Image (cartoon, rainbow, N blue to C red; front, side, top):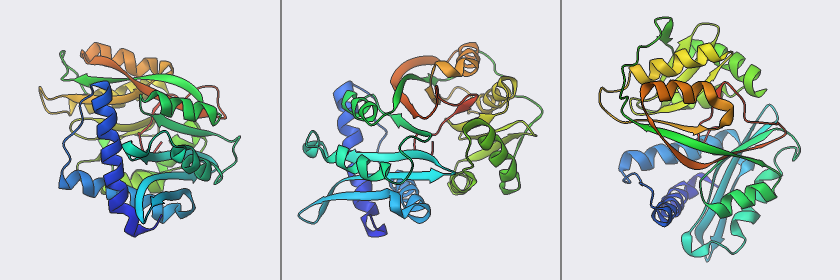
Length: 281
């Protein structure tokens, strides 16, 4: 992949996700200029940090599929994998992911946040990843949520803490990726000094890591408390490892829905207390 492929990759991703949403009766966000820009920025971010992990599949000069992976301290993550709906089932996705898997130790730690597409989950399982079914929670809080006074808004000066938490929870540091998240409009950093952090938007939790369950609960409650009153809020990629989060969201009155799976390699279960980002692991 080159930077000039980014717009085509955005188109492929949008078409593939839209077709999947239609197939399973899921809501699909409206495509906007801001959404395209954020997606292109994400693709270019990983092209900059991990160019060897980004690939496209072409047919007669047009991009029909792409994959992006990145490696942090030996920890491999698949950020994106998509093929055009009319090109699926032809082995293109398998060829793309095989190329990305070669960028790290195939027996080392790694994660994939999989959509609910059964063929995607089967592909990742065949590549050596264990499947952990996931839920996402959504809706306005139906009961009052009080933030933790010790949680504050953070910034670039807190990236050292972010790195310490990630190293403890997942064995790798991804501060370059958190810094990119914070450069995107709407993302904010929440910090519990010495114990954890979260990246959140007004309408969703992006990612969260903490050294203990109590700290993780405090960060999640604060993200919920800062949501727009009465507006929907989303928290994704909740597995059985995240009971602290499930209990906190039940208390707030959010509804749960099954969605995809967190696939892991080189570990017995997804990291916890930790909530991954769909594209940043």
